[in-house]
Length: 429
Image 1: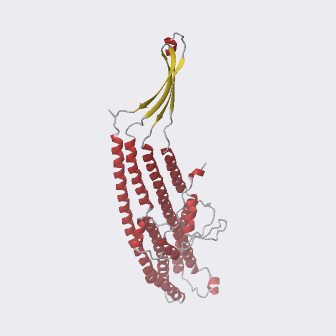
Image 2: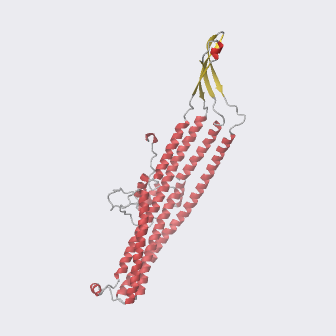
Image 3: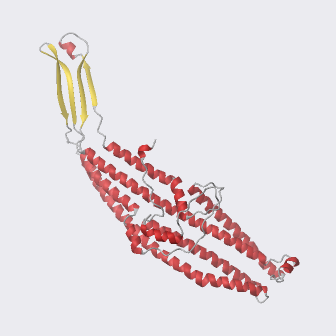
């Protein structure tokens, strides 16, 4: 785990907790969710397989061309000595000589492996971001559902259900028919809010379970939304950007393209071929064995292979441009996300102190005033709506802050979990 992220994770309570899958009372932390996703996500298996493919290319890059054998059978000797028939007149072994080409191919394949490994890290970073998004969406849906049920419970507290309830609860004063009607509207609206919140929670839970490979029927428990901790200094985040896995993948792509220039040059002409042969001829009125060596070299008259070299050069230019573009986008996003995160943290703190706390106090005083007959029903309904709307907006601000923090991690290249070691494909069946 990146050193500069450790204090942030500790303060955010994101330490990876051990999980017992049969224990629904345990809560899914963000770290535990990411760890689970890394184990089951097909995205990671895809990048693992890509590393294996590149290792196969490296193995093939060192391979020499196979030799070829030629056998010639004809009736030449039979015609020369008038004996007739067919005889083996020549046997040859030919071997193409890949002078210099294999070394360039190996460097290109090694760069391909390094690029695939960096891409593996980038895919892990994207997966962590995806899990964080669904985790925080589910946190908000769960918090809204609890808030909606609390709102429904509060709305039902003042329903005039008869003299027996009024006598058993002296805090509930007599309600006029008009007041009962208005409170019933509030109650029905609260019921609708619960139904909507349940639907949103079920959808968020289904998406979260699908990403983590959790059975759809298994109950979920998440840590509640809390205030977002203050982020690291921007300079530290900007320094970590230099080791961003996406940039590393682009750098290795440049190295691979540069090696591709040398490969293209070595492949401009066909490999020279060395042949060793042995045959039979009719000389001095008798059959005699002959042997020799032949070197076959292509003459570059019509095709000199310059197009491949030109193509390889521009592949380098293209990879360099893509690296510059990626770095510019990451730097821009990091600066924007960092500023937005700071604003969201300040906004949530201001909202909690200057809106949420006063709304809660006003709601408590309004209920007491209404029970004492000092305030009318409209004042109570207004205080009720103000308080619960403020609670909901505060939860949304907390979620927006956590989502923005996930954006900061993605832009700066910081991991919430340690990088997994590259698998050894020599053991794969």
